[in-house]
Length: 168
Image (tube, rainbow, N blue to C red; front, side, top):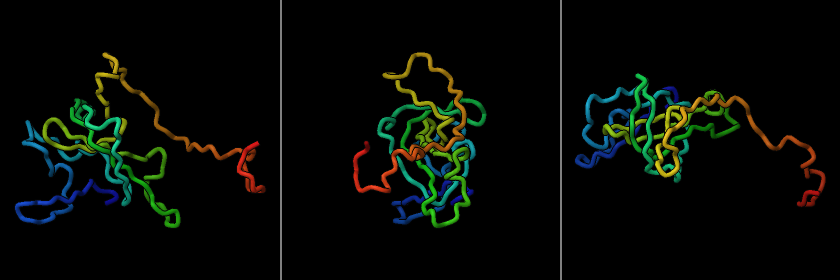
């Protein structure tokens, strides 16, 4: 639900029931080690759209990673998949932020080593791949994307006045 934390549906096999609207911190993949991280550490941003796309980035599948928590420490885990937001219909007024370049957020789902799951944006996540990462990683300091890019801006490639398909 837009403007709220992820809500997830779970199948409870001992009851044969579906239980829904559970936040991310209600789930664990093993007994939680130590103090559990609160919901706002596991997911920094509320959902920005009712419409999502689930992406499995094959290159990152099962890779170890770490993310910067709100307290400044690192939380280690394993990349699972990414949830990305979108606005589905240009015929409907877009009142959300999913199509806004500066505010668009992806949620990378992480299976945390402590037993919890997290949904972290790209800018808080570092992928740890020993076969391709250098021994000393640079600390990222990238600027926020603010420009809308397009390649269809030059009229010399326009074909609207001809039935040919080849460019001269």
